[in-house]
Length: 199
Image (cartoon, rainbow, N blue to C red; front, side, top):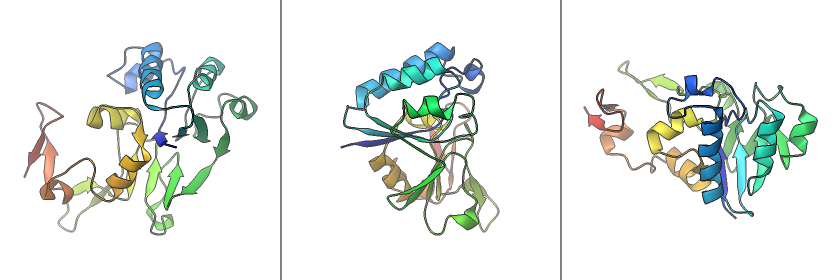
């Protein structure tokens, strides 16, 4: 049994291309996510959707056609379609969930409420939770992982993360990073965002 996470699919969102420059339309967004889902997730797989699954019933029908057990962590846009309709597609629906020593939520949890557990979340699109180092530099807060395609796809070239990738991320083992990158002493190249410049 393989476990996967994806944040904010936003199926049926008419303006999704404004948030995701790597998609051209709502249909393109759905096709790219569905193609990867069908390729990577088998019928016995489990997919946690970190909220904002679908803006339309047609989008819900599309999710229903995808393989695997589907678990929804409700998001702020998940009130557009009814919970009754969502219950026909998702095997479980939660507001927030503690799973394998991590918090699964749509919006990031306040740091005071983490209680020593990392937070897998969505909601913030291409942003992520930052913290200041002792010398004043802003770096990614290693207690949080944003699973929105807007954040994940440009960084790692995929829409869906495996649970093993999530666990390795929180251990600082994935993606492979140099010691300087782990310490936050690196930045992305302004010319090529896929290139890391070590400081």
